[in-house]
Structure formats: structure tokens, C-alpha cells
Amino acid sequence: MKDSVNDRTDRYGGSLENRCRFPLEVVEAIVDEIGADKVGIRLSPYANYSEAGDSNPKALGLYMVESLNKYGILYCHMVEPRMIKLGEKKEGPHSLFPMRKAFNGTFIAAGGFNREDGIKAVEEGRADLVAYGRFFLANPDLPRRFELDAPLNKYDRSTFYIADPVVGYTDYPFLLS
Image (cartoon, rainbow, N blue to C red; front, side):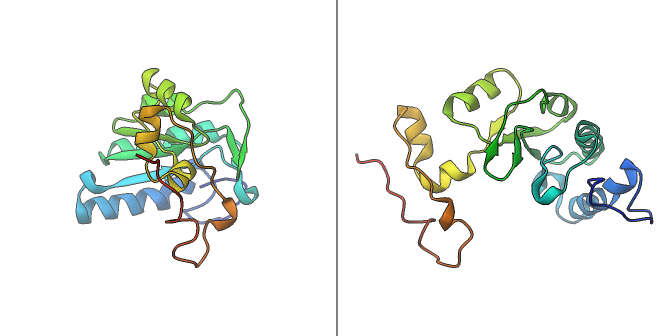
């Protein structure tokens, strides 16, 4: 979808509409097969992972959520603009709020949230839900820790996406009762 990496010259390249055609066709096919109430999508229009950025990420995000509305999907999960590169959080002038306002379904925000940021995002209407990926990996009892405002285990990024079925995914300690 991003213009820095999509150099196609067919109906899937060039204009914003063309670059978004494929993911929207996939959403339509899945909705037709299993129903919109079982379909969600994750988008990161502002991210520049692997140098795959877009010259107008706001327009890209807005076009996608407005287009997704016609399918009535359950949720749209978007990565905050402050998450530019993997592990790098940088506050800036951009926001997901225009996309949140434009999307008719449940809106999930992700990207560097801590407990306080997440509560504030929901209270201010910037998201319906907040995702805490890395914190959940390291804290299998994260909702309880948030409820108690208890300290969090630190995650170990070196154990992410490794073949070991235990290390880094099931070995983090729970709170003591």
C-alpha cells in the first residue's frame, strides 16, 4: 500500500486507490466467506519499518478506514504514528484520531502504550481498546497488574520470534498472591 515500496504499474500500483485495492479485495473475500463480525485488520500507515514508508500516511490511513466501513468489519487495529521504527517511540505531530473518527467499528490502538497512556487514550475517545503486545508477553497477568498498579516484568526482546516454544513466551513470572 505504501508508495515508497509499491512500484507496480498495473491496477495495484500508482494511485492511492490502486495501492489499496489488494488489501480491500482480501477483506471483501474474507467477509464474504466468514462474515464481517469475524474480520479485523491491522494497519500501520505511519510506520517506516524496513524503509517502507508512505509520502502521505494520513491520507493512506483515512482512505483505508473509510473504505473498510463499507464492509462493516469488526475492528481496525492501528499502530500509533509515534512508532516509526521497531522499538523506537517518538512523539510527533501526527495522530490516529482522524482515522478513529472515520472508522465505524471498534478501533484498537497499539504502539508504546503504558497503563496510563492506554487509560487516557480510551477516556479521550482516541481508541475503544488498547493493545499491549510486548507487555502482555512479559506479564501473563497484565490486567491484574494494571488493576493493582503493580510493577511489570521487563520483556526480553531477544526472545521474541525464536523457535524455542518456552523461552520468552511462557517463562515470565506471575504476581505472587
